[in-house]
Length: 359
Ligand code: SF4
Image 1 (tube, protein in one colour):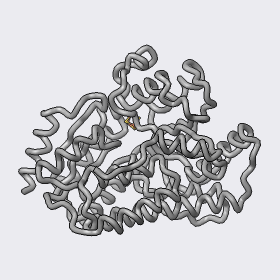
Image 2 (cartoon, protein in one colour):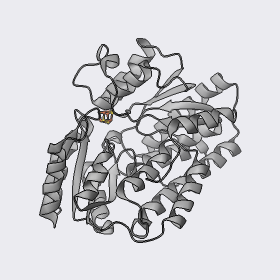
Image 3 (cartoon, protein in one colour):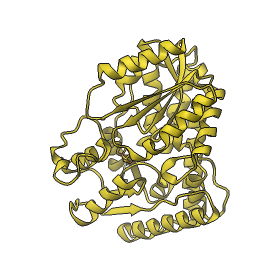
Image 4 (tube, helix red, strand yellow):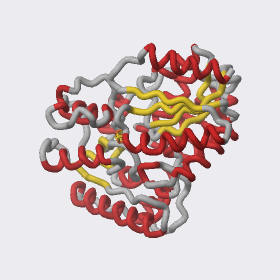
C-alpha cells in the first residue's frame, strides 16, 4: 500500500509549526475560513471500531454508528489534540450531537454548531454567508485575530485549487494505476491534509502512478463513507473497480469555485452550489440526474448504495433513487453497514452477486 501520513502525524506537525487544529464533524463547512485563522481542520468520520460504551449513556441505540463513534472518540480522548470542535448540523443526529456537546457532555474545547441552509436559492447563500461570518466572529474572539479580506480571499483560492485538483484526480482515474483502496486513501487525505500539501500529493501521485488502472467491472459507490475500507479490497478481489462515487466524505464535496468578491458569500456559494446532497435539502430529481451523469461519464455498469445503518437522510431518498435508476436502466444494490462491525460475509456476498449480474 502507498505510504501516506495519518491524521495524528499531520496534526502534530501542524501544531509544531505554531498552528492550531479544529476537529470537524461531517459534512459541509468552510475549510478556507479556518485556514485563514491558522487553524487546520481535521475531519472526524467516526472513526470506525470504537468502544461505544463511551457514547451509549448519552445516545439512543438507534442513532447511527457515525455519531456514536464521534462521541465515543471524544470521550476516550481521541480529540484531545484539537483546540476547537466544529459541528455542522448536517442531520438530526449531528444536530443532537451538537446540542449534547454544548449543554451536557461539555468537552474542554470550545464548540461551534454551524447551521446549514436547505436549498440553493439566493436566500440560502445569504443565510450560509451569515453563518460563516458568525464563525469568523467566534474564531476572532477565541484567537484575538481578524484575518483581512485579502487573507480570506487567498485562503479561498487555495481551497478552490485543492478542490479543482481533486476533481482532476477523479477525471484521470483511467490513467492512474492505483488499486481501488489506495485511490480512495489518497482522496480521503483531503479530510485532514492542508490544501497545499494535498495539491502537492495529487501532483506527485498522478506523475508516479501514471499507467493503466486495475481492470474490472466499473461501478459507482454512494453513501456517506467507505468504511470499513476493506470493502474496497474485496470489491477489487471480486472483479469490480470503483470508478467514481457519491460519498459524502469524498466526491460529494468537490465544491466549485465561488463567484462573489465578498469572501463570506463566496465561501457560502461554494458549499450551496456543490454536488446535490440530501442533507442540504436538494431534490431527488437533482440527485438522480447527477447520478445518471456520473454513470454515463465514468462508464459505470451499476451503483452500490453503501449506507450507514440508521442514516435517515440517505434512507429517505434511497427507494425513490433506486426506482428511478432502474427505470433508466441502471442496476443498483443497497448494502447497509455499521462502521463498528468488521466487513461481513453477507456484505461481500451481496456485492459479489451484484457484480456477477453486471458481468
Ligand atoms: S451517517 Fe447519516 S445520520 Fe449519521 S451523521 Fe452521517 S448523515 Fe447523519
